[in-house]
Length: 264
Image (cartoon, rainbow, N blue to C red; front, side, top):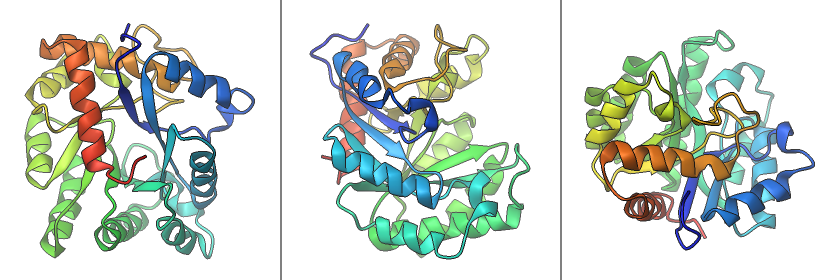
């Protein structure tokens, strides 16, 4: 387990999720006790983004990201995007997202996903806030849109819960992005993903939970996942990369503070 003096940042959680109702304070306190010093709580809809900002205002341990996750784009109501754009200027907000593309679930027409991914990327570039990319079964599509956005100007962001290959990771980093790893990297059958994790330079790697989803081994199957479990992913990555846990904790936390530079 991570030593109490160690500082870890969970760069992606969904603390607004209903599974944390009634236990949110205890969940945050458990994270604090294992060395988590910051949690970025990530919005998935306009309403979720608003709640995330409110949570961040209430706790010095929580920062907010605001956006509309691709699988929710089909449910957007009039004024929702304007709400996200307005919230992005709140001091509690450190990132734009979660955005991206998803071909696994058939919840939102793909052209609508692309429209909203483009909106998030443009908002990131105009606000100078980093973006958070969701990707599932669509690495090539993601890269096409990132390349187009890069033609407009510099990119700042993270490939959240990365599941691509080494070539994709390399191109994303060349475009200025960080690579985030969640519980999936700890799964017994994730040897290829662990090989990708070995290839990521120490100044570009981030760690996250994606709670309440993707509980890491040996908590796989436990619901809800929670930010305290980020230490399990950190330990797996440290073992995989053959570095001390403390060293990787320091590196990932420093990287998070560079990328999410509005974080408290």
